[in-house]
Image 1: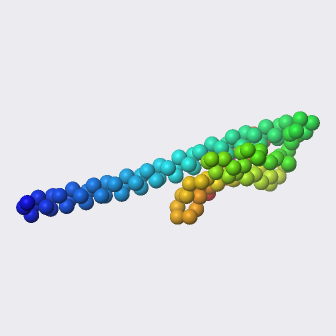
Image 2: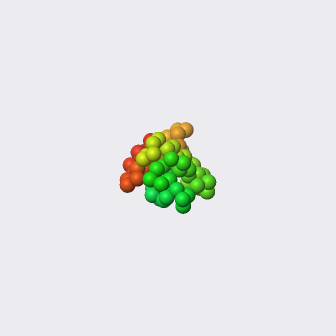
Image 3: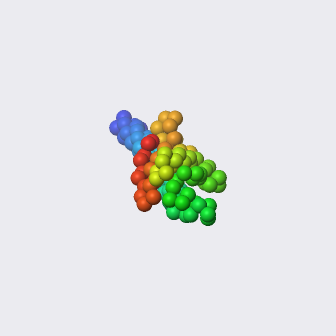
Length: 127
């Protein structure tokens, strides 16, 4: 083989290697975004559950226009997506924090916080 052919083969090998590395990076970024979206969706479902608790009369096991006493149902505190915690900050506000199973950067997991009020919720991406 001539020297030019060897250089073309080396160039081809380098290009394939770079393409593989870029592909792996894109795949990992998409996996993290997908996991973050799943955690947000589960938090939104829990926000709906908290708002239902708020509106339900105390005689039916609800809060009677208060988030006091709200707890995430046991079957939803840990799922295949991650783990979830609720912190009642006042009678009209509860914070739901979801921590995913996917590692986002280095050693930190995907983490999302929802602040739930009786009529609305706000999402904050922590990691």
